[in-house]
Amino acid sequence: MHVSLTQSPIDPSAVLELVGSPADGAVLLFLGTVREQNQGQPVSGLRYEAYEKMAEDVLRAIVEEAAGKLGTRRIAVVHRTGELAIGDVSVAIAVSSPHRAEAFDACRYLIEELKVRLPIWKHEQYVDGEARWLEGKAPPMPQSAGP
Amino acid sequence: MHVSLTQSPIDPSAVLELVGSPADGAVLLFLGTVREQNQGQPVSGLRYEAYEKMAEDVLRAIVEEAAGKLGTRRIAVVHRTGELAIGDVSVAIAVSSPHRAEAFDACRYLIEELKVRLPIWKHEQYVDGEARWLEGKAPPMPQSAGP
Amino acid sequence: MRIRLLLFALYRDLAGAGELELELPAGATAATLVDAVRRRGGGLGRLPETPVVAVNQEYAPLETPLREGDEVALLPPVAGG
Amino acid sequence: MRIRLLLFALYRDLAGAGELELELPAGATAATLVDAVRRRGGGLGRLPETPVVAVNQEYAPLETPLREGDEVALLPPVAGG
Image (cartoon, rainbow over all chains, first blue to last red; front, side):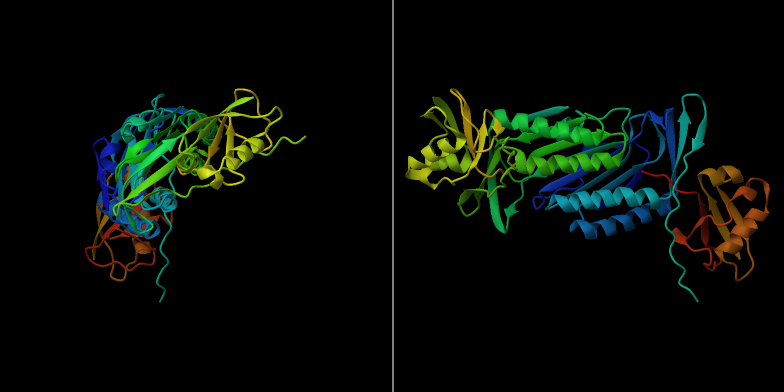
């Protein structure tokens, strides 16, 4: 199990190598990449800002949940922070498992949860000189324990 | 769009590089790998035999169907044939798409269809010296056109 | 008419050969071919009555009429991936 | 009690700072803190009434009681991935 945030470019092969085992028949790698446009507006680049200390804890919690679905702890998640260019990998998720159904479910769970729970924000710069923080999603809040 | 059968080891990075575009935000790579055991019986190695001419046609047809789901033709599928060792990649499927939901759906479709339609057979050799053709799946047959 | 028959994996092992040339009567279908092959006996007698068939590299129903020079393959259940 | 407040992304831009030290009365909750911060006015007056809050790096409801030395973060809707 591996989770990290990094300011350096993500190498997909290196993330793949963090998982896999002779016991496994299925490996799945998801890469999020920076698109050249967002809702029709040409993008020149973007910056990810993270609450780093918390983000690694949240990521670790999500990975533990996914490991339950996967049946293995062979999961690696790396999220990029700082300045990114078009085509750069923003997030890499690798999982491996004896069987493929669990690999697909766990990988999908990881990316969906990460997108609503990870305290990371995206600042997009556009070709026309504009720039803004992307509208994000409100993380699901824990219930109050009550009186 | 790329489909091939190969007797050489599959390099996941090379397959990844066949897809991807600045228009895409999601890349998914599935690897099937040779497991060290099958239903509890330790495996020493295996051999894939293919009806090569037909397999490439069938693969191309499946990829065209998946491209419809994916919304792009940025799909690469490489299937290994011949002798494989434990841990070797037997099949690599890469897709890229503007959005992740389509990438997951198309990748899953590709592996599920390929497993029931591709004319390829698996001969497993076991540590105890036994060897046999794996029980496969009957491909869905086309309906007769009728009289 | 002359038909080229391909056999794969388990079926090739049963036949002891991956390729056979068959002479079939005019009007023969894939089913006629399967019957003829099973009647040869030996390992081929253990072929299923309705194996999966491909005619000219496409899955085809057993009713498919065959033509001179067709390539017919008998395919065990597949196991790629 | 003394609280360390962290502000991120849009909220940091509104505040003009990523980190503030706050002095809050005993018995204060995360909600008390949010009220106090919004009353400072300026950019911070534009904070939502119920922003997402983390206390000591964990998402926490606004009713969460605060303690001396807590690290509280106000988090805009997230957009990783």
